[in-house]
Length: 234
Image 1 (tube, rainbow, N blue to C red):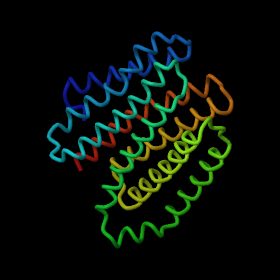
Image 2 (image 1 turned 180 degrees about the vertical axis):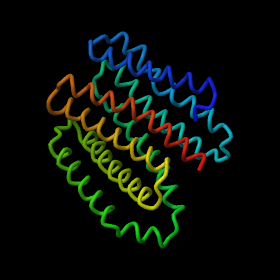
Image 3 (image 1 turned 135 degrees about the vertical axis):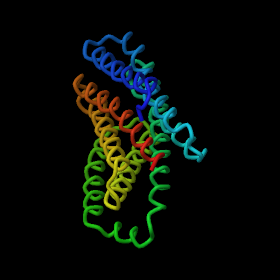
Image 4 (image 1 turned 90 degrees about the horizontal axis):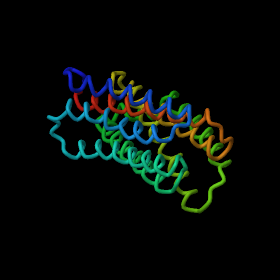
């Protein structure tokens, strides 16, 4: 992915932007956060677009750009709303997950029918999905939402997380490769980030929780970029 100086330079600046943003978050410098955080996602997206500029499937490319766009708008709305959650942020984040799940489903469809049946009956798949459903349901039931629509959005989050983990488990059980590894890492970072986000704003309100959430979300963009890259070249 980083075979030329331009893409490598973007990755270096991405690391720098993440370090500066997280440092600003620690010391509480909001102005530096406003400058550094908007650079994180574009600096990962640009090398990816340069690396797969010959991608022939326009619908897949559009879906990939939408994934980054929805997550980016969600993060920016949260940032410019002075790090306070809002319905706009939740809606954009949900749409990003919907695009991600759609991309995963398109991968799952390519698996032979007999293999699909075997995978869906596997102990690993059933145990993973069951455990995740229990954990996320417990968290969801303890969240005090402010409206019926917000409750719906949180239910959508839970469903999307379960689908993402389920599809990732199936894909990695079927075939272990770089794409599957980075897909799993991206989803783990995403779920951890969002869980700590929920803990911070709906349960404990601790600065360390906000930092952990932001750190995992920043790394999520990197793993997402690698997943999309390996998906496009396989």
